[in-house]
Length: 322
Image (cartoon, rainbow, N blue to C red; front, side, top):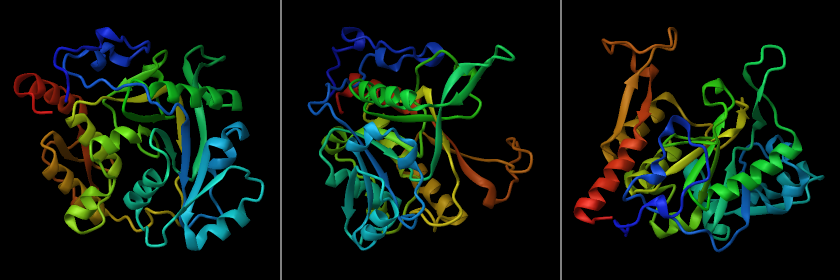
């Protein structure tokens, strides 16, 4: 239950939030307590890429003691044999665990509750903002090992204030230069969350799969929708970024198709009133006013997580329902 008399002015966030919109200061926001288990654990789920996962070798070895490479029991020997230099931890998943949502939930269930950083197994690199020496304009550079250690501690710190979040992709982020986080923004491939809060709120990564009796994709979006609708705020890092390497084979998402993606969009729209859908031309890359783009180009236009969060706060203040 949110205490409607409590505001985050009692615990101001020491972070520079983009767009001067600090949702943490919103009356009715659900505050979180610092985690009793201060350890930030890292899990890298892999399936079908036991011999080709990339992420573990771009992380500093100092973080391996907090890291878990995860795969199904029948593939664990292959994973270990393919990574002989890795001295960190392994997480064995039941063989029947199939699909992104179920794999992620199994990792959450098997690890101690607290702070968890879940990274895709084919991450190419991380990056940090910088000023270009030639132009003097905001740019990015490849993160070094010291940067990644700082990123680890920064995420651990964020999870004492925010319930969940992720890192921004290292695309064009010059407009965000100098800021720490952006709130109410979806994150994929490199996400972090408080699993004790997920358990408290009864959230399960595979809940929509179980409800609809089929594999439902976009579990990252469902997490954002679910927690935002409960009054929790997320934060995506702008000072630490990721470069995702699209893979050609393997992985838990190998069976994803246009039709399954569209089906997931329809389910999210049915579950959450603030989810909107749009159509986009892959050729022009622009919105079309007449909505004439074929269905195979349909995608999730936006999740209005800020609107969902503010609506949840208002509902709590007026009806005390959360």
